[in-house]
Image (cartoon, rainbow, N blue to C red; front, side, top):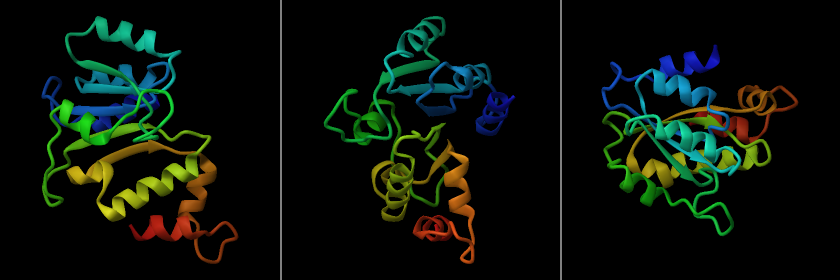
Length: 174
């Protein structure tokens, strides 16, 4: 199962070791449950209010292993609902400290890129990585994101292929 594979890849030590993962848009909790079962500390960042009651219910059955926040991780510093998410506030509230890029990864993030603005979100993440801004102010961040097959093919395309684009060049050089 994909959820179990993701949990295995993100697990940074034995269950209960304090490893923490941000999950963007967890939705119906498939990956969330597998990550929690693997012993990871979770912060679920959900933008769809439909899923909040399910996540809150799951949170209430755990002993501090899951925190649920209503926000859109992919729309940092927004002006429209859901409530704004400011990277600095989020990271400071959960004790995520800035560390040098040569050090270990301070945070792991897993989730699904939004289908509606997928290319824009990819560009934003790449720009932030290149400029060491936003989430990358805190050092290296391990991103484990699901993207559409269409965007994936563009990212891995070669110069002689029709779908080769600036996004392809940028992703392959970073």
